[in-house]
Image (cartoon, rainbow, N blue to C red; front, side):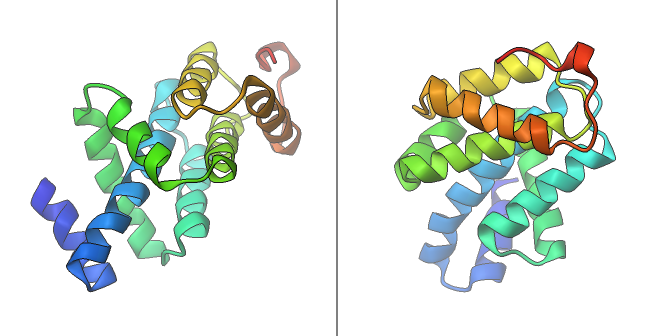
Length: 160
């Protein structure tokens, strides 16, 4: 698996050192998004589309590159023992504002299927804490994602 990840980034980015540096942040961010997508046990098309668009927009990837990154992130997430291996990379590489944007993307994924589960809510709050994003910024991102969601079920909107 590690060889597949290394090969992907070496092919996409050319320089091996730059590829490994970029690999860490891209894969870590994608893995966090995938974890939210998997949290409610039904990763639907809307959530997957948000994850794909998020990694494409955040990292400037072509559609096929984004698909490969998500496939690698799904594998990494399945084999992960904890979230620290992903959040530590994000903490090292991203500014506070970029980490707030990652939390906002996590909320967008959770709200993509118009139903925020308590498991998604709990996970995102936990990840926001691990990323050292303030409660205030986490709630602001959550409310923005909820407002932008296609259609909401008020009975399952979660709590702020």
